[in-house]
Image 1 (cartoon, rainbow, N blue to C red):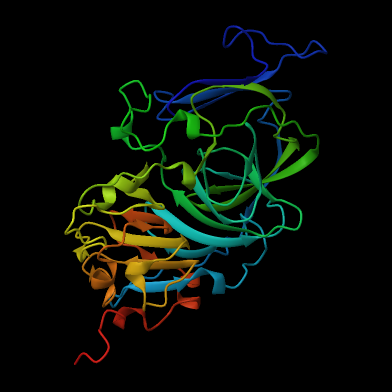
Image 2 (cartoon, rainbow, N blue to C red; image 1 turned 90 degrees about the vertical axis):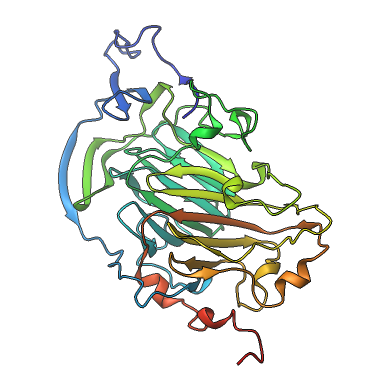
Length: 391
């Protein structure tokens, strides 16, 4: 994270005695990246966070990935994906796409998830619809439609939908860390003036979240699979923490679009960077204003990337006739040239604004396909660029 925060009660000096009201010592936990040579947070627990009573293996039911062969552009209708083995934001994830760097899943969560910790990398949650609370060892974050939530590696958390709400989420699980692109930050981590969002747009936990409980189960994901830890005490017992590593939320509506006289490249929409992938936000904006500008995207070939687009709001004028609607995801793989649907270029001339909202994830290694992609795929999508009546 770009800047230092302190929440709750902490001692004046780190690694010094800090006592509970009963006279016992609070237990320190240092969470740090890159061998404690990068961002870190120091948390103070009421009880030792190491007290584990039992550990057991848990079957991972997310399914296997299969290569995108023969090479094919894909259209997945997420709203037609069947609910997973459970209806929460952790064990209810349905795997759509993935490679060695990132896995993309979709879920419809109507119940609180179990406590969960990803030991492989950071997670990025995008709230397509609904509202709730992401409860974490750092505190709670209220979330709603359009929120990105970045959850650092090894953070214990759960997602609790509001009563009567069903929360739709796109989940990106990285094999490493997710953050703002380096070009948006000063060498000391402050957002620069040209960045499309800044510290004021980020929402952080504001107070400790304290819960009681014994023999509390936490699911932990590692490269070997899923394990279940049974802790002697509830892990949400942190009275205070400080540092520059913590979960945070950014609403896509707070992303300030960068526009130009002619069509701008996708890089102007970049919001996050992960290991060998980027995340971009397409938001309502003024379109290109050169008198002869063509507002629709030009045909393009991502020669080094696979591109996933998640369409979540507004009208996607360049994709009319393709069957794409809200909740659709498209995969345009490297080696495939794609662009506007037939007739979209002429129809866009003179249009001054777009109200579209979409999330794009570009990976620098090919994406394989998960079970949910095949389950809800539009088999006719690859032929939608053929103009009606064309030979």
